[in-house]
Length: 384
Ligand code: NDP
Ligand code: MG
Image (cartoon, rainbow, N blue to C red; front, side, top):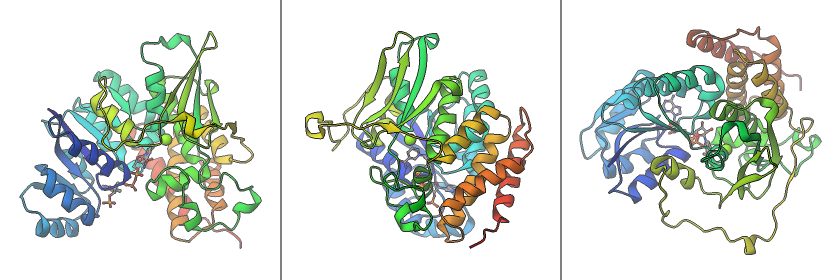
């Protein structure tokens, strides 16, 4: 019986992880579980799976929860509580499904405690990849990617030698506005941005997909997870999201991993690795029905945030932390109707330009750069 901890359990990845656990009660036990404030989603799952340690974001949510639970777990609160959730002594694997840099400290704590990591929370690797990977090596901890592209690459690399890899090819659906020109992006609404063609995901990553920031983050995530240079990472638009990503080897062979767009597959693989298991109600890939797959260039002119991600990744140090925090703040402002769509990228670019690079930043310096970037972006004003 594998004992699982989830942080961010009420979100898109979190609830799909719960689906996988609930579908395989002989294999998995939910041991600890943290979410933010969404008790409507949390309560039925908690009453069903009854983890004995639960984390919530604040005291109000704790009180609400206590009134609705049919059993009595220990409840912990806030960011400190997340550390208790992930380091619970019985836990084997932690699924990091919170959104944003809030995942950084819990991920480091889980690695420090020797837990296997199922990593969905890519912002953690973007903001502090050097610290996370160094600690994972020191503690001999396995990080299994949940992000579908990285799960694909991980599978393509199975049994291969690192020195045989020529390049990694990340596929991108193109997001909500893939058929729009840049000119058409000026006045798009929040609602339009939230309508992703292929995947149903949390609000923040859906916006990140529309701006291509998500793919930029995935470039940085791939750099850290698979130890590849930025020059050896390519991005190709593939609108069907059937090929989840590819690896090209030195002899010209290209390995691809294909499947239906269903996040339960990479989530489950992170939980069952190296075995595989049928997914209940999972749709099988039928290429005859699909007929054609399409590929197109992901140009830096059309998607400036993709260029900025490569640049920030290559600059290294504190730049990716600023990229991430500035984007989090800008997306937050966009979702609140406070700035327009193209002002997300303008905000991120301005923050990167204003920031003075810190090489090899410590955890404190990363948290400081993160705080600075958020403040910087909050105070930006745009002419109408
Ligand atoms: P959602 O917005 O759907 O869920 C986010 C979760 O994090 C919720 O459970 C939320 O709690 C919780 N949360 C947010 N802030 C805090 C906090 N301060 N303390 C504790 N919990 C908090 O996000 P997704 O599931 O879409 O994404 C999660 C991560 O996975 C992201 O990093 C994303 O980039 C990555 N990812 C997602 C994919 C997807 O298909 N969705 C695909 C690949 C990667 P509550 O709502 O209860 O307040
Ligand atoms: Mg992805």
